[in-house]
Image (cartoon, rainbow, N blue to C red; front, side):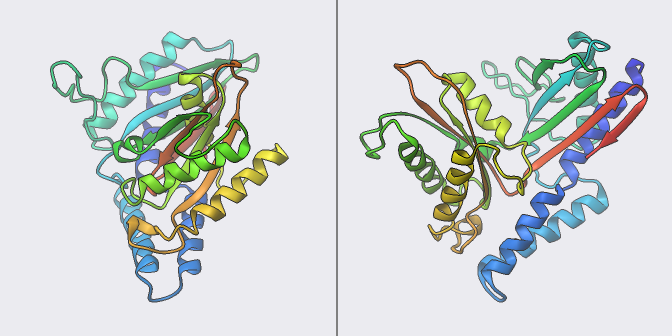
Length: 291
């Protein structure tokens, strides 16, 4: 596949992520409407969110005005090179910004100047994973600034929460993060949890959990039990959509665990708002599929 074709496919991936709500997210919001009950403020709020999504999809315009930071997770085979992929992604990002699929979101932290095309030092964020199989598997998430601001990292033990170095301590951290977010992260959100690792791998692992399907079950029975417990507990807090009250505070909780140093026990929460934008692409030879 030549450079122009590859860039075009990345552009389409970005467009889809920005303008089309994924099926699992739509299903979860509809389930929230059913759980809240007809005539409630929470149900009305969730209904408005879906109406917004329909209009965005029909007009091919962003679901949310903050199109967020671009996180690419790329599994690439021996027929591709990182330099080639990075160049195509950067060109597609600039073109997507020019086409208004993305808002200019890359600001120089020293000068305060916006690059105007979502390119700059450290952006887009690209995680490369080499594999033996030919072709590409690309996962893209657009993560807004509001939800990033309410993401938190803890270190266990935590005296304030009376949280020890065990899964109950992890649970207390995640519930605290959700409680602190209230409606500020544009709830209902989804929470990715990174258990263990170090400062940076714990956060990046939490964000990668957000690429899972909301309807899946964690293959680790202990983590599956943890996810279900935290989801139920979070939705009993009464925070609800946009913090206005209700039973739907989070749409999902997804957790992964990593080995850690004996001296360290980090728990990271990656919160993403209801505008949960993710899109996937597979490339095999000249065949391209999106999901």
